[in-house]
Length: 160
Image (cartoon, rainbow, N blue to C red; front, side, top):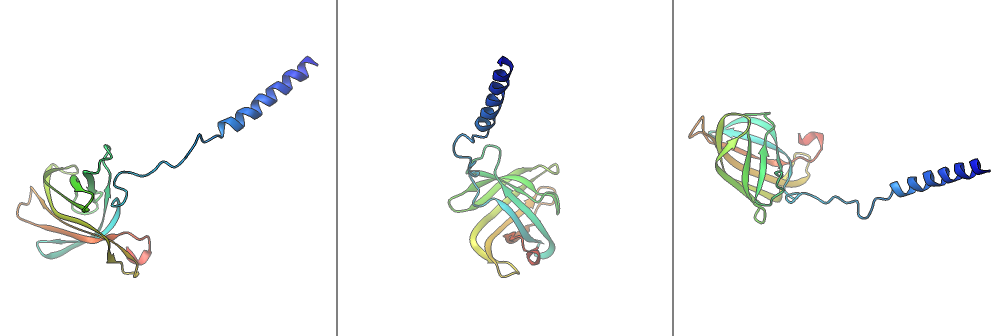
């Protein structure tokens, strides 16, 4: 009889622990980063000194500080190699920076005229999406201006 009571107690404790361990403990929504409204992947055309150079993808995302005053600008080394932490004005959705450390190569980059416009572009699929534009000048090729302009990735194949 004592053995049956012990088995019942173990089963009861096991059952209770399953229900208790499944409790999410409140709101499971983790929220978003501080710059979620402008973070994302972008399809861009790049011109180099006024001539078409490349069609590429870049990303904008928060820094580890999750600040509203800076963000990463990153082409994931698909193109020329641009990864720099730029100064950000989130309210106006503008960004820039002078002599920024470019982390893929041992150079600096100056980013100017950076702007994101909500619903400022129409992708080839006809989808209205955000636009991005900025210029970059790399220290190893001074005076050569690179212009990046494009739109937020939509996920549609025809927009790639």
